[in-house]
Amino acid sequence: MLRCLGKMEVKRMIRSRSQVLLTVSGALVLAASIVIASPLRAAASYQIFVSNEKSGDVTVIDGNSLKVTDTIPVGKRPRGIHASPDGKTVYVALSGTPSEGPPPVDAGGNPVLKKSKKDDDEGAKADKSADGIGVLNVARGKLVGKILAGSDPEEFAVSEDGKRIYVSNEDTNTASSINIATGKVTNIIPVTGEPEGVGVSPDGKELYVTCESGGDVFAISTVDYKVVGHFTVPVRPRSIDFLPGAHIAFIPSEAYGKLNVIDTEAHKVIQAIDLPSGSRPMRVRVSLDGSKVYVSDGRAGSVSVLDTHTYALLTAIKVGKRPWGIVLSPDGKYLFSANGPSNDVSVVDLAANKEVARIQAGEGPWGLTVVPGSP
Image (cartoon, rainbow, N blue to C red; front, top):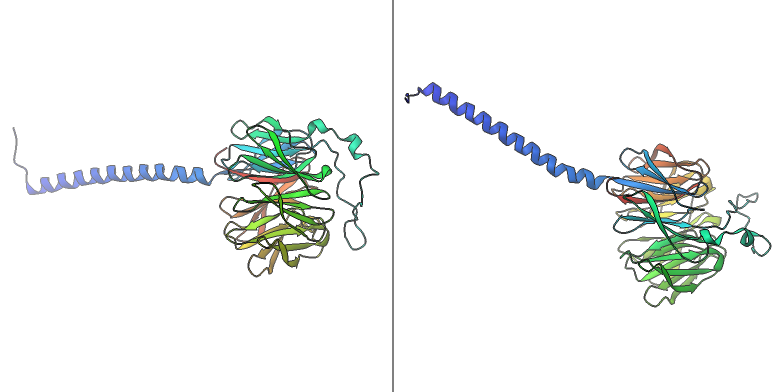
């Protein structure tokens, strides 16, 4: 039988049902927030791949924990290292040409450079079968192949569509364009002495190659592979990076401790900036927002920070011994430097402009690349 309910009982039932509904809705909101947050966390994760020139392997570091998660054997003298646009593959330049080590320096701290390699026996000792671009499968954490890339590849760039690799071949004074799908060299472009740095303009239309011994820089069309620009900077230009949304690039000159500002439309130097005393710069990176440019200072043991618009030197951040390659985290909060002599990687907090950690790598860490996504 149904019975009549008093006013107080009805109120208690309403309150009770309301509490149940609130509990259920709260649980649904919490569940929804977990579902939404998970992809955000996953998107923020990343890995750093470090090429170790002397130990012949690649160190893998988790970007969140800053812990080494893997060491992948790859072959002789891994140096230049870059990820494919989709993050599924990491490419690393391998070479069987013996390392000469850093050049001696004079009383002023300037490198004493060889005028010719004719008198040394480097060529006789070279193992050309070791040369190539190693192909690492990121998901498997394994070297899965090697692309022939001409003689003694040191640095390279991957095209924006991920279909081509552009390589500097140091001991033959050439640059090569390689079709990744076929693994074939399709174009060879003569340049000058000891080509090293390689970069592709933001619009993908021009390939830049920097040559160490004479300071020559070549701009090459990626359509017909003809030279469309040629200028010089002080010797040992090691790398290049571009300011997004502007016809500006930055090229460091190692032997003179300078950062050169380049007009990429006119193909000329518009300014040369002195870096801190003792700097022997190698790698340059422009920040994700385009406001700053970072330069590894080599022997000075620091990373210089400059304003990309005024070109003012803002600060120099102390890191490990002889920082060589540098790379930025996907969120732009951290910079990582490969410190060759101390076999480690510095972690720099860019908000604080301070080194906050060191991570042990292999022997002679040389270059770094970042792969977004979970290990």
